[in-house]
Length: 150
Image (cartoon, rainbow, N blue to C red; front, side, top):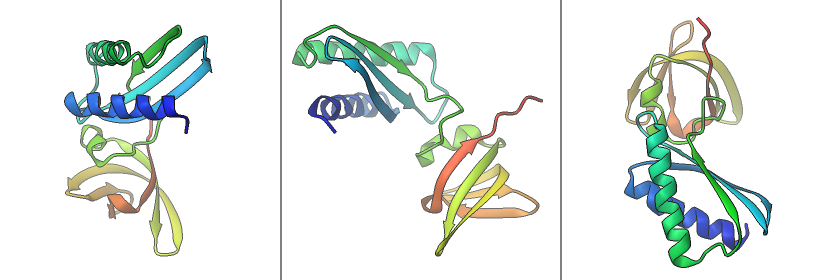
C-alpha cells in the first residue's frame, strides 16, 4: 500500500470514528495529475446523502490543512450499496429481516446458504433457512444482502 493511501485511510478512519460511521473501503484511481479518491462509509443506520456530504467536507478540510494532495483530485464519498458484502457486525442490524447469501467456516470446511436474518444476539446471527441456523459473526467469510424485487 502506498503512503498516500495509508494516510487517506488513517484520516478517513478518524473522521469515520468521529461521525460514528464505519470506514468500509478507500479506492484510489487515476494518476497523480488527475486523482480520484473513493471512500465508502457505512453505519448502524442507513447513510444519507447529507452524511456523505458532511464526511466529504471534513475530509477535504483535513487534506487541505495537511497539504496531503498537492495536485487536482476528485473526492467521492458514498455508502457501499447492497452489492458489497458486509464486513462489520455493526452493519447487520439495519438488515434484520432481509435475505442474505452467507459463506462461513465450520472447522476445516466452508459452507454456504441463503437465509433470512431474524435475530442478532451479540456476535451470534440467527438465520431462517429451512430451520433456524445460528452462525457466529467471526466465522462468516462473506455476507451479501440479496436484493428483493417483490
